[in-house]
Length: 413
Ligand code: HGY
Ligand code: MN
Ligand code: MN
Image (cartoon, rainbow, N blue to C red; front, side, top):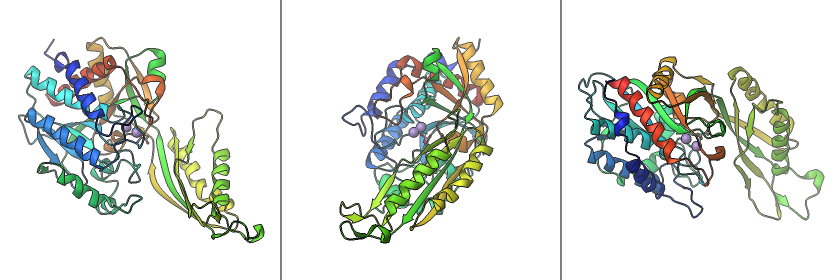
C-alpha cells in the first residue's frame, strides 16, 4: 500500500494544541467563551498563524475574516483542497465544537509534512469567520460570503448588541494579527472536508468511532420585533395596555404548539428574548426575539417557515409585530464521491463507521454550493454540546484526524 499521512498523525501534538486552544477564553466551568471577532477569537487566530508559520504554511485572510493556512502544492494553478471549521464559540460553549475540525485539519497538514508527501494541489486549512452567530447574527457568515450566499457589504454592516459592526471588530482582530496575505473571493476550491464532533448521541450509543455525514438538515432563522407601549405597572388599566411581553409569549406558545410533530423532527427554538425597558414596574413596550427552526426535509421546513409570520400576527393582540427572516438554508446532501472517499480511507485504516445526517448546522453546508463537500463526525459524550460540559475522547479525535489526513491526501496528491 502507498504511504499515507495517517501514520504520521501525532496524538500528543493534537492534544497539546487542543489544550492550548481551549485555554483561550476558558470558562470556570471547563468550557470556552470565544465569540466571533472577540479578543479571544483574535488570539486563537494568531496562535493558528504561529503554528502554521512553524511549518512554513502561508497564512492569508479574506475580506470577511476567514483565515487560511496553505500547504502549497507542486501545481499552484490547480484549485486547492480545503479543510477546517471554526474557532468561535457560543457564549458558554465547549472545547470541541469548531476547534476540533480546525485542529484535525492542522494535524493532517503536519502529518503530510512529517511523512514528506508532496501533493499536486495545495491544501488549505480554513477557520471560518463567525460560524456560531451568537455575537453577530446570523451565523456562518464567513462561509456564506465565500460561497456567494451573502454580500460582503451587508455582512460587514451587521452590528452586535453593543453596536460594534463586523467591519470594526474585524479591524481590531487584524491589529492583533501579524500582516497576512489577502485571499481573494472567487478563488476556486477543488473540494472541502470538515471534521466535527457529532453534537448528538448516536455514535457513542452504537459504539462506532466515525460518522460519514450524509447531509445537514435545513435551518431557517428569524428576528421578531413586537411593539406595544410602555405604561405604569400600578396605574395602567388592563384594557388599555399594549404589553409587548404578553404578546410575544403568546406568539412563542402558539408556534411551539403548532410546530410539534409526533416524530420530533421539527425543531423550534427561541434562544434569545430581549425585553425593553426591562424594568419591574413598567409594562414592556418592546420585545425582540429570535427563532431557530429546523427540519431534515426542506419542503416541510419551508411550509413551517411560511407560517411563522401569520402565527405571530394572529397572536399579537393589541401590539404590532414585524417578522424578518435572516436565514433560509435548505437541507443539504453531501457529495457522493467525498463520502465514498471517507469510507475508503476509513476502511483502509480498519475504522468502523456509520452514515448519519447532521442535525446541527455547519459551514460545509454552504461550501457545498461551490465545491464538492463532505464531513467526518467523531463521537461526543451524551451529545452534550453548546454547553461547557461538551467532551470527546482523545482516541476518537486521533481517529478522525487520521481518516481526514488520508482523505485530504487522496484529493490533493
Ligand atoms: O447552529 C448550529 O447548528 C451550529 O452549531 N452553528
Ligand atoms: Mn460547529
Ligand atoms: Mn456550534
